Structure formats: structure tokens, C-alpha cells
Image 1 (cartoon, rainbow, N blue to C red):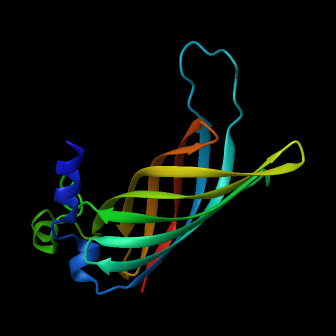
Image 2: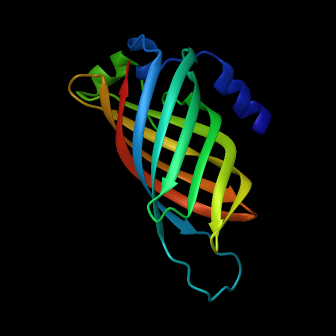
Length: 178
């Protein structure tokens, strides 16, 4: 099943961001909410964290981007930097359809959906000691292009794993394509 999904993603399909805009670089600034994923019958409470993320994307194929991601929690207990890939998912639930489909559906603000994965190094502050650890993050994002078709609102939902623990991350932010 995973192989089938990868083949579909690698086939050149159309989406608003990939075919209508000849962009090379995108920049996202996102405010995230991070919640611990509890497994089993755990009764311990976990505190919600917040973070600020900045992503720089370089389009190397019409539906593929190489992304450089950096994150800093608002309490300065964790910071990340990593590399990854973003894949546009055109037509996902009829979102990100072709321009003709959007016109027929009377949508004036194009929407793009994508999946992403990135991995890198995380600096975790544990009782005053900085510990370096590897992290992975994968998820989905939705971009709603505004009136000028350069800037967009972005939302994401993802799973973040570091030091054997997993977190659910949801965020909202602004982005721009150049």
C-alpha cells in the first residue's frame, strides 16, 4: 500500500500551486500547539506546549518541494532544525483541483493540500542540560490562497516524534510563494 501511495505521489499530477504558479521558493511561518499522545490507560496529565516554526521550501518538481524547517518552543525548552519533502496532493477530497474545476465549482480562492515529512536534530533542555536527539515529523497541510495568489493561510496537522515519545501537532500560519 505504501508503495502504491509513493507511486501516485511521484506521478506528475496537477494542483493549483504546481501548475498555475511558476514558483520556486515558499516561506511559511506557523504557530503550533503540541499535545502529548497518551497510549494505554495513562492517568498522568501532560502540559500543552506551543511553538513557532519557519519553513523554507524549494520546488524541484511541479508537485515536490525540498523543505528546511526550524522550530522553537515558546518556553525555550526545545529547538529543532531539519530537512524534508513536501508533496502536493491535488484533488484530495476535491481540494486543490485544477483551475477549471475550481471555476466550475465557483471557488474564488484556490486551495492546495499537501503531505510532508521532515527529520533532523532537536536540542532538548532537560533540567538545564541540553540533550541532542533525532526527531521526525510527518503530516498534512492545507493552504488557502488569498486575493493576490502569492500569500496564503496555512493549517497543518502532524505527528512529531522525539526521544521515543510522540506528540500531536496542529498549527496555523501565513505563507508566501515567490
